[in-house]
Length: 179
Image 1 (cartoon, rainbow, N blue to C red):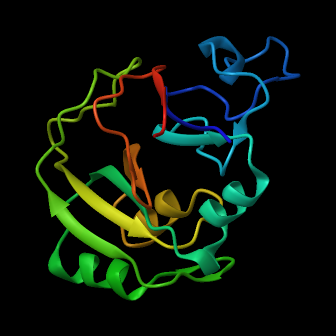
Image 2: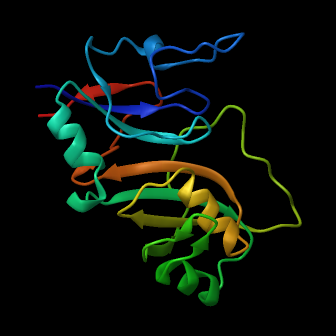
């Protein structure tokens, strides 16, 4: 059994092939071991920890909400995260596909991260802040939709951990095998 921790770069697909014309960057370009596949997804425009495995049972345990593998994201948002907005996120937000489960939310200092290419847009007149968002579910673009629903659009999203697995010091495109 193999479990790979990979730091997925911005604008890379969580699959090994792409039929787009021209094709977009995929996992195939990073020298990953053969016969592994992503346990879960991370949006094309999101960065950070992606787990890959050759064990279907492990992939299921990591991605099924019933197994409660918390996923923590560092999220740069546009706007001021007031106590009311943070409380809304903690309680759960009503999205077009139903209410979200309550989330762990805390405002954090900007994490030490690599430079993103292209950089996040910066506007002198609009403040931004960083949140640590912890979820037990994983709907399509959920963190982005949640922050937008409370008036805090996401500028940058980096997954920092999945259950006990941490991004650690991996740089974009780097991977390591789990012990």
